[in-house]
Length: 72
Length: 268
Ligand SMILES: [Zn+2]
Figure 1 (cartoon, each protein chain N blue to C red):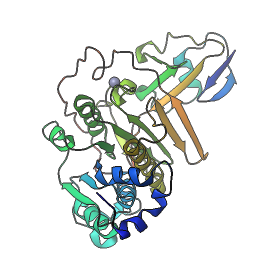
Figure 2: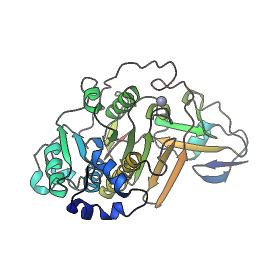
Figure 3: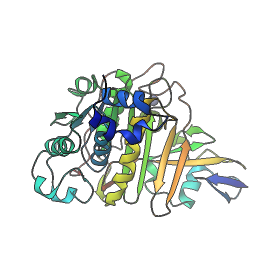
């Protein structure tokens, strides 16, 4: 199935969850991101159970401070 | 208010724009913009707003200029090291444009003082470097019904969004709460390219100018992200507020300002 991740459409296996997508995409600081699927926020607690479907568009929104430090 | 010959010349490149004109320039000269944080983002933002002729600029920052700031905080110069950032910023702005009145607040914003500080301003710029301040600014602006532009930068990346009351999501709609202070380790030095502040801080100034002059479309309901390594801007559509936000929702659970504890990072 095809899923658009941060604007880029890629091929994934059926049954992919948000948690698995985060792992496959090597997302930095996965505990502190916001995810939207088709312009709806996904609850962070449900990342392991939310399955993605063909044609979904996923965005990762990152916490960003104002300078040279990063939250881990 | 009528323009002096000097002002007509100084702002001629604005006045010639049909989106600004004499009317827009008057709005800018009558406008009051508050910049919280005179650092990587706030420095370039303040300079462009000053050059633009925003008539009143407030600057809030508790810090003094440090040598390690100068790589990106271009409103301060080598001779300013050790000076309060608000004073150094004010001196630079005064040299740039005598039309601008600068109000300085040499203090950290907190639940105690923020409502009083933002009260008289038309638009607020979040140029802060830490999450407690970012959430405080958001919540205060939501409660006081003030528009503001959030931004963040790190390494080669930056982002910004503009909150306008009743017009779109707030920062807390997107990021529910700050990362906990006791997440171990909470933070590390990551570095940032100085020009990132110039790019994103200038975009914040652009949002303020558009808001004041009523021109174009704001980043309300969108998060603009910039990746300098890929030289890629992305305008990400944000979900519409669903009424459940803890501060801007229909039954907000946050009705008083919160002073979150700062993770153990030193100033940025
Ligand atoms: Zn909200």
